[in-house]
Structures are given as C-alpha cells and as structure tokens.
Amino acid sequence: MLVDFGDFGDVVCFDSTSRINKDWRPLVLFFGINNHRQILVFGAAFLYDDSAQSFKWLFRTFKRAMSGKTPKTIVSDKDAVISEAIISELPETHHRLCTWQIYQSALKHLSQVVVNSDSFSSDLCGCIFNPDEEDFVNSWKVLLDTYGLWRNEWLHGIFEEREKWALPYRKHIFSADIDTALLSEDSITSLKKYLKPESHVLQFIKHIGKVVNDWRYKELEANYDMGQHMPRLMGDVIMLKQVREVYTPVIFKTFHQEYENCLNIVINQCIDTVSSVEYKVSTYGQVRQYTVLYSSEDDSVACSCLKFQFVGILCSHALKVLDYRNIKIVPSQYILKRWTRDARA
Image (cartoon, rainbow, N blue to C red; front, side, top):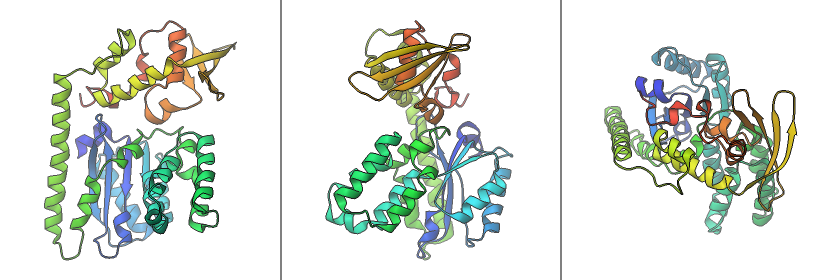
C-alpha cells in the first residue's frame, strides 16, 4: 500500500460512510486510482469514536504510515468533524467533498422519487456530474422543475454548498477525475457486507486482503494487455502516435476523444499580448467560447475550461491551438507521469 501511495497518492478519497449505518462496523477507507483508472486501497481502519480528536489521530497516523507524504487533494464525505481534522492535520492538502457521495446521498434522500421514476437517477447523475457551470445550474433547475422538487430542503442545502462539491467549482484542483471512476466501481460496496457485527474482524481483514489482491491482479492483467495490444488510431496523426506510446490505453482513449473533438473547434479571435497570445475558441455551430492562452517561449497553453488542471489531460481547445501553432507533439509538461505506462518506474 505504501508503494501504491507513492505512485498514485496525489489524490485520495476518504470514505467514512460506513459509520452512518449503525448495523455496520465503522470502517473508514483511504483509496485512489492508478494509471489504468483502477481502484487502489491505501489504508483502512475501524473508527469507533466520531470525535475530532479521533479523526485527527487517524489522519496523523495515515500520514506517518505513508512516510510523511501527503496527497495534493483529498476527497471526503460531507462532515464538519472530518473537515476540521483534515484542515488540522493535512493543511497543505486541498479538500473537497466527494461528488460521488453527494450523488449516493441524493438517491437515499430522494428514494421515493427514484422509486416513482425510471429516469430520475440518470437525470440526477447527468446533473451532478456536469463539469460546466452554466450547464450544471440549468440542468439543476430543470431537474427541480421536472420532478417538482423546488421545496425540497435537502436539495436546497446541498445546492447552497455546491462550491464544495460540484465539479464546475472545483476544476482548478487536480482530482484525477476520481468521481467518474467511482461511478462504475462496486468493489468498495462489496467490502461493506462484511461489516455486520456478527462477522468477525479477522474475517473482514481476510476479505479486504483478498479484494486488494484482486485489484492488484487486475492491474497486472491491464499491464499485460497493454504490452500485447496497441490502441487503434483515427489516422496517421503524429501526436496520436506519440501519446499512444506514452499513455495507458484507457488514458489514451480519453486523449483520443479530445483530439477528435478538437477537429470541430474553430478559432474565432486571436489577440496578441505582451507575453502570450489569447485565442477565443468554440465548437463549430455553438455559441459558448473558451479562452486559450499560448506562450511561444515554452509552448505552454492554458484553457479556461481547466480540464488539464482537473484531470491532467489536455482539452480539445488547447489541442486546437497547438495544432494552429504547428505544434505536432504534446509538450512534455502536459504529460503527467501518473497517467503513463511507466507510472510505477
């Protein structure tokens, strides 16, 4: 687990939802994702005391166990005590609330709506995980209108706190897009069936060891498949050839999609400034514009959509500007090691 944290501990998800269920043992988990976007467990503990001091001890102990290294970002449940402990023990770490947990809580609080509507869960998911601020706000209003939820106090409360969890307001903080990875991950949930009091602690420890080994085996399989097969390209494109050799297949797939999208990006305006060039770009046929700043000194690009800052992969807008400047390979500063085939090297 220490090695895993050393390679992929830049973003940590802290799951303490088991404490809420009084029929379960109070398990807390530290986990993240690897370069194949697979789950990795960094640590686990049973926490029978919900006090701030206990959580402070937990984060302090976790930091010590990880040889003093701290994550860039920690994502946690919505809990004032946890927030206090993180601020105290991990002051240099960005803290945000887990969007995935907000989604799970919403399904629980709105269970009657879920039962009565086949489309509510997917509509809620599309709204909560929307990365664009304007689209997020509009889809939230549509959700409330469609399902008659304007008077729902719980929804009103979490919307008031949206800057702590909603993706459009946290895009400047690197998160490795961990929320999206959690959507398709059911192994964390599978652990919780062993948390009933009648289940012996040793049985749980044995099971979590098995789950961790299963995840590690999946990584070995992914590494083997990566060495046997190369992803297909949309064409004889120098940049795609470059990153195919560098990124893992799942990350290359994301980049490939951004590259395809950039073919539909148009440059609407170009403004020279003292230190850079400012480009106004948009998707063909759409009104919304993004601003991309480019500097010829180091081939740096910065887009207002903040995808690189949030996910660690260049967006279609930045790729369009690089292509416009006749830059045919991705500058090295925009290839994060944690997404590469050699991330563990």
